[in-house]
Length: 463
Image (cartoon, rainbow, N blue to C red; front, side, top):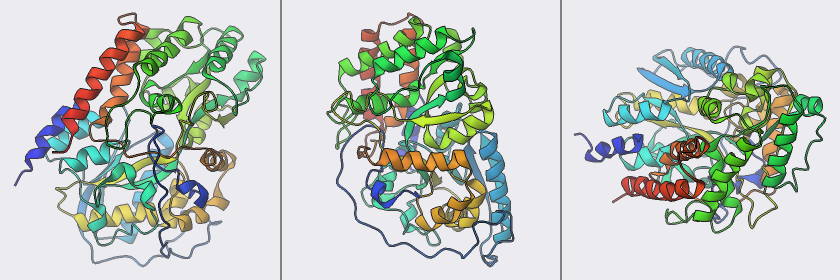
């Protein structure tokens, strides 16, 4: 029988971490939470991590599970290629399971998935981000992964599951963990004759000044910054204290003044020439890595997830480093947290839950899968898997892992994002665009953002 709650889905369309950093896992809104207890690890296949990841699998093939499952994820070319290679290995291990791969870009991903969820035609297994697990899980769209035989959740401490948990149910498994940071193109800094900032002390004002200096000392078409308005707000608000965007009850608590400062940040960057003009900026928001200014070597700084360093460096061919976000010592709190980069979720209406669970278990708990994927989906949370891949990482990949460990020394501890909060990234982008195009003042955008975000939370609230 169709779950009537699924009708509400249409409203939503509008490291291994070091043990010391695991207690910092959560969302990016700077909220606080109690540390969580350790969880017993499970055994993993004994492999030589220094060998080619395409070596013959050490697991015995599983002949007793059958089914055809659709698997969807998003990412750049490297992730797509690696994921396809992992699927090939999985089908070798599980000859009774056929995987229909559905690689995608991030653009329009959530909208398409929301429509399919409402129509009960979602992929059997899907990559999820942010609050999507609780959004879809609260409406009956996802299976409780804690109840699935064949999916080992032992390696995942509760702190890594907060954004997928409602009560005693967990609706997705983290693919890995990462942290937000500022990606710096060292080559552009050198070309502009600008010194790298001290990321332990720099402010948002420093960021604007440095970005403007880079733009003034590089050729036309090269900019000082390329910020992502969809995701930055959580960190920005978390720095200002009071809990960030939401409190423990899932209530919207961000101050009007914080939103005004946020929109003015983008306006300041545009007016100083540090960031691209409104038309170009709007085209680039949400673009794939290869299409961004950072991915083409045309911006000095960008706001990215730590697991994207290698992909940006490969795409641009530039020397790049990760730095802490500005403002972390400027305000009341540290806004950055260690959080799951993505999740794997399983559709509630899948015809083959056993096959879907086997695939997810393979992707998050099998060292051979991790050897193929590397840290691109985030640092593996399963410590056995993390230890297996560490010797195989190149310099950029090791820098990604090291950055998460460094940020973990300071990171705040996040609370779960409430149902409905998946609307925040698209709403924030739309309001930033309205400000950049002169359609709204920062003050008007802040007021409208608060109204629309509250409406989204109300629509997503669990009865």
